[in-house]
Length: 281
View 1 (cartoon, rainbow, N blue to C red):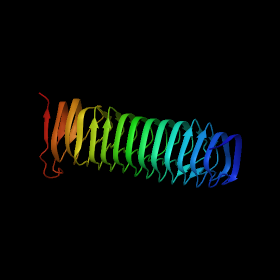
View 2: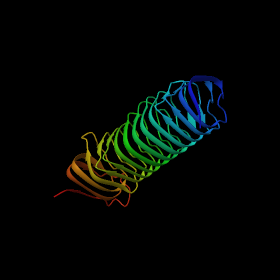
View 3: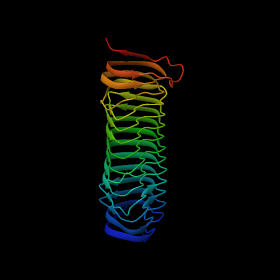
View 4: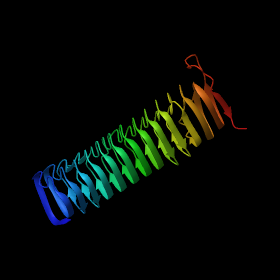
């Protein structure tokens, strides 16, 4: 493997179609597509300032690097990436990729990141700002996530999430086969139109959570007092610890809670309208 160290590149495609390179303490200056159509690339202690540096790259490692705002849309149409201990200030990262491993990464503009990606393994990721992270992605495993981005995990399939703190709005809409463990989910309209969404040991806050959901499961979950009009038009099995403020028009299933503030069943309920709602004895 060739080592390129302590230098910089600028302009368009300076390392185009390179293979078996180790870049150490290299700066990619203003320009486009610096490392395009490459394979077996290692980047350590590097700084990326130009647009689109890693496109159509097969097999690469990024460690202790920094992506400046100018390094937008940096990782597209690539596969087999391991990224560790890296800070990203650029938006629109990770698009149409598969086989991604993330460990201890901070993204300070998480706008439209991880779109249409497959097979993502994440440990200790922080997402700040931006909208629609993980849109249309699938095959996701997360252990350790802190996010204040809006509309996170929309249209996601086949995901398992542990130890997350997510503060957002309209999270987990239209998801399918998603399980969330030991997490804090803060924001309005959580999990609408989901299928096979399962929450285990989670705390939920925000208005109108978990409506229009199919085959929803809650195990040992708690609700903030702000959670009113929960479960409208949903089919579910829910084991709620503590109190829930209001349940409205669940379609079918079984809900048990330590305490229920109120239940609203009105003429707008959908058939079969046979959900069992009870306080724990």
